[in-house]
Amino acid sequence: MELREKLEKRENKELAPYAFLSENSKGRIDFPEPKSTNRTEFLKDEERILLSKSFRKLSYKTQVFIFRSGDFQRTRLTHTLEVESFANDVSMALELNQNLTRAISLGHDIGHTPFGHSGERILDKKIGSGFKHNEQSIDVARRYEVSPKFGSEEPYFGRNLTWEVLEGILKHSKIKNPRNYSIFNPNRPATLEGQVVNCADEIAQISSDIDDAINLKIIKGNKVNELHKKLFGKPEVYRPWEFLKDLITNSKENLKEITRDNIDSIDYNLITFSDSMQEKMKEIDEFCKINIFENPQVRRTDFKGDLILSKLFDAFKKDIMLLPISERIWINKGLDNKIIVKNYIANLTDKSALEEYDRLFLPYRE
Image (cartoon, rainbow, N blue to C red):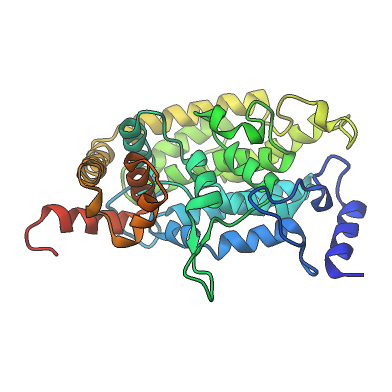
């Protein structure tokens, strides 16, 4: 018996009846390929995402606080690893498929723009049809991640991930263009593993934004302690664990009557926070909006990021030949210039966006 088959049998034996089993995957939707002898399909996807250029670039993409450097500031990569850790904790507690959970977690932001959500807003405005990083992540995973094919001048396009991993990546955030992704049933909930990643992403964001703001002296710790005392009854609290405990407890209650036979008939999310915790999270969101995102320091850096990406987009769209030669492969494939520029800018890191800006608009740079 092959190792993969042993791993699949172990899943059947050890996972909860509502977990998604690797052997039940709908497969790879872009082109068929033989199954591995020593890895499950979702473990293979984990490795493919980890080894992608788009994943490595996350280390140079800002989470929130752009143009800031420091030993403790989070990047899009550290955020992704926190999401993976939180999601894995929940998946393990609920006896779900941890390989599927981790693969979705690792891939959920590979299409994110430079300069955080500021960059996302600019591209959304520029292309008109709506830009969302989760949709871009799908497009990167299926087409725009380019890697060399040894012995051939034609490269590989995309990572050829499984349907379930792609679906989880798409559904971790609101879908703006559902018609473009009908193959993933956009109006249906994701697998339970995908729902876990969605909640873990919320936990990571709501926790890390405050920590980074304290380290950057944008807010004071005593103000956060006052909020903690109001919401949790004590000033010193590890927020992620409070959220995780609630999510696990509430989701276990939701899953009591769920089996492998009836899971597909459920048309709403089962992995959810309690009503009381959702209210607390809304209050923390409002706290962050007032005390962090509307802070003049943050607004000014967002403005600067908006300006840089906006000018880059306009310049490249006006003259597509300003793009690097490597991007001309997409011109030859007949892609619309606006989409080519959108993909190129979304794929930049903060550092490379600044360098491109200098090369185009500063006379002393080549």
